[in-house]
Image 1 (spheres, rainbow, N blue to C red):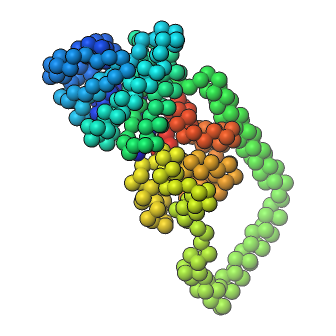
Image 2 (cartoon, rainbow, N blue to C red; image 1 turned 180 degrees about the vertical axis):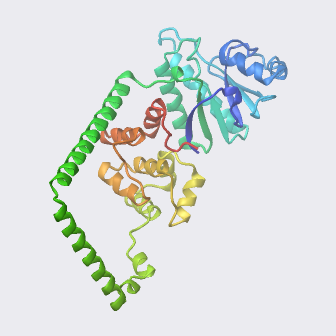
Image 3 (tube, helix red, strand yellow; image 1 turned 180 degrees about the horizontal axis):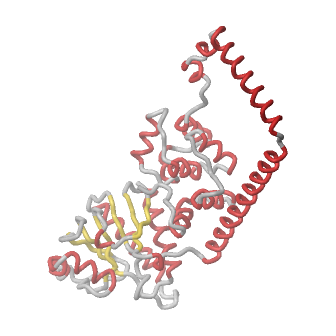
Length: 349
């Protein structure tokens, strides 16, 4: 199942389990911890009192009570002390232990906030990198939907250098597209001004004559009748589904490798495999292009089989083109950029 990033209040997220950024007492506190306790109701605190606390890096579960989740998985993140006191190892343990516990509880979906990135002071960029890395590793071996819940835009960011580079790439593409559009308008205006009325009349008369002759041929020789639907469909190129399966085989990839690299749900992939004429969403088609590591010309040809193209007038398309042009095929990295620019994610439900 895919990895998602959403902006939401985690206390209102519907999932089999939500992860709580707790303190070692498990008795509630500030920030996300306090919000989850308030939303769950007093039953959560009563059960937490029976757990005997929780050590940093570990995880324990309770029922969800008034939350829209069956379980709350409490994990204690490290306090940032400069990065030389095992903070990274402990933070990774938080995610691994929480995800493993979710699977043991039979959960099919789990949502989490960024652990330690608030009052515990863990640097935001590093906290995001660790969270996505651990989610990616876990999804390679497990079939569960994992969602990162970000409360607001200030709680999520990509590196300033990459943001600036993508922003410049988008701006340059827009400027080039505008320049071409201006050139087309100027050329059209010049041609229109140069055409004399008499010349236009002659051209229209000639066109009408050709159209009439064409109709005569079609009626007299039954040419139109000969172009049957069967003839046209016989000339049809391979479908998106056929092209996808062919390229998977050509690259020696397995189905599981492909849909996981594409951040696509296994059930959706099964639908595509089972239906030769399946029409995917554009984000799905792009996700498979990324998983197959197609270059830009290959991507354009592949998307065309599903009726799509990448333009220079849409932020989503340009962000995809930027990453492919730079040889960046990690869908988690691409999705971070898409999320930062408020675009639909690849594989997003």
